[in-house]
Length: 309
Ligand code: GUN
Image (cartoon, rainbow, N blue to C red):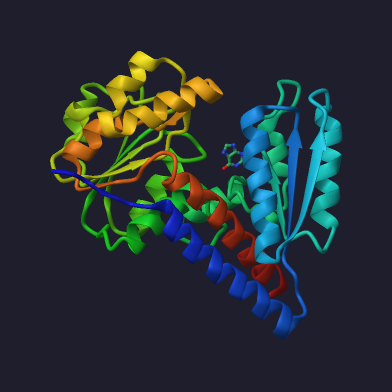
């Protein structure tokens, strides 16, 4: 078998075009421009890339965007004060505090201080609770993007066995709730799961969100499964890269390692997935692109919900 590659690019473009249309409609019919403020603390290079992409995409779609970049030494109290200010500024519809935060900051308390109506990450306990109750809420962007990629690729979810590897608050747990809402049968596996391959091989839809490059291999993948790779890892070892990529893909990867010092790899061994799965989301070019598109969608959703329009 050679898996169908599910392009995040095409689907992300479609969602962004829909969001841009909605932004225009809000402006024309209500005189409203949705606004997103992203707060970044410190100089984590990956966060800088993600935040840059969030700000740029907002601007492309006509969403008012603001980037607050604070030093790595910013105190917990100062960050709390900034979030509280954003909570009361009416033109701010969405607030996103980029994670990870420096050690002196209590991330949970910061996330809980965000007005749930402006919580476009869907990380506030109120939104987490609403999602688990099946109520309308702002939903975490990456798992929401996974559902979009499946639906828009005509992959059935209802009645299927969705197995998630990883139990993070950002991906694994909300992913489980979204699959339940779509009437899937859901299993969550994690680092303490006994005989992981036995369980993951039963998956119709397998979602890998562990943060370990190429961790999901042939033995984990049932023939004909849909494999969704949420991981984003840097790999710089050329021998390891050779285990992950078929010869026709390897050359490009080795060049990237030579030029940039690394190549981007998901949590799934792509060579194995392409061999065994029916559908596979690549890294890069898969779920990652959807995350930003869903953030834009959430910002517009927050603007509408807050204003009752
Ligand atoms: N860091 C990595 N992923 C995310 C995300 O989805 N939201 C925020 N705020 N930070 C992140």
